[in-house]
Image 1 (cartoon, rainbow, N blue to C red):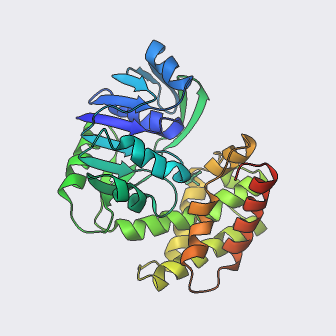
Image 2: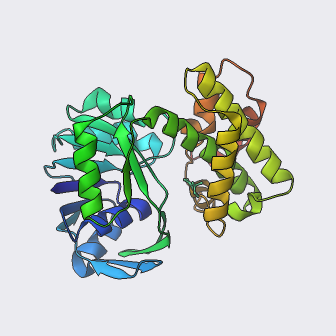
Image 3: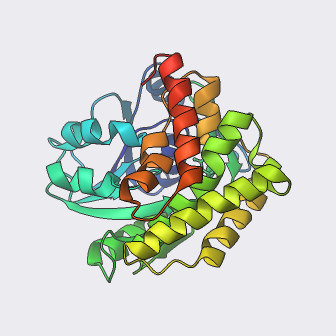
Length: 295
Ligand code: KPL
């Protein structure tokens, strides 16, 4: 299958690198990373050790049957415009936050699928990605139900050695993932601690409250997500990613814009019930972004 990974940073490069043994993969990312991959291949270290050679590594996408979008949520509209000429049959969003699939579907003609991914990845240097946790991918129709495009994409991922579930309840799963990110990302970034610091103590209670607020907003939007399920999903990810720095913590250290708008900010936007913890976390991270001029 002809696959374009749009947003070949850490996670995109890892997924694209794993698929490259089986599929014709183009990594689309930034220099100097894509240049290093062109010259020496992509080196994967950590929990998976291999060097793969994607067919191409570039800054502009060519044509594709499947486009996997892994850019930051605030770059989704630009990704959709850049992928327009590639005209992919299927577009899979593996991104944080809510609303990415709608943004992609607003511009692209192909079938847009929703996905979540629990792999951990870190860009060590141009051309080298560390796998900090072997995970799984879950994907399916963005509105729920069966989808032939999702079945085909799931098989392509499985052939590439990625443990993949094709789900018929992606809307609920996206809200569950939102509860996890709303609980972990802003708190670990503001406190500058690894995810495992949320196992117990006061920070773990704040994280659980943020996740419960997300579950309440989800239910008010017609999604069946119980408080207990949101909190136990959060606790599970805190445990499995304990040594990792969340993506928002990495963004703060690198003085980059964060995904606060698509995570805790998206909860506030959709809330018809009070969400004071999400409001506080959003306010603090936005204040940091304004102060650093990255908003
Ligand atoms: O998705 C993540 C992120 O860091 O953005 C989690 C699940 C919190 C893992 O760190």
